[in-house]
Image (cartoon, rainbow, N blue to C red; front, side):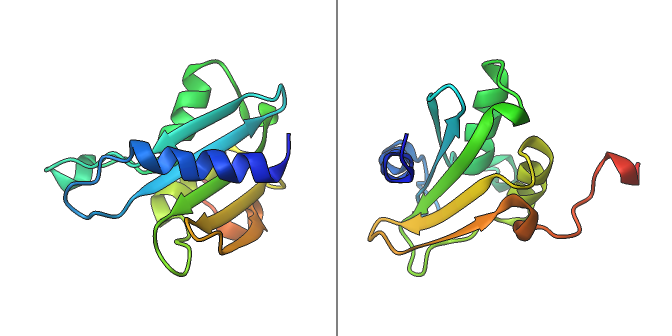
Length: 132
């Protein structure tokens, strides 16, 4: 599975965004080691604190289907913003716990502007079980 196919799926996930308040659409796609791609979209709520980002939607879906961090190869995150929107702090924390630190993260927009990074570069001093 190519990174191009993964990014195409992240852009396709934008269509499932429920963002009537912010109009800020985000889609995410996760590539699993068995070739499966799991998508997620941001889902807003009138009670703003109950909104869920695309990255967390995709990761929670993957875990709900029985996948674990060692099954995840990469995540692509697409938005309609220019420049492409990096994951929020809450998503960075969840990504740092539910994905391996060397997993690839591709951040792009619907115009195909993009950059790549690693999980460990998103949140260098992540809060973890060692802090508990």
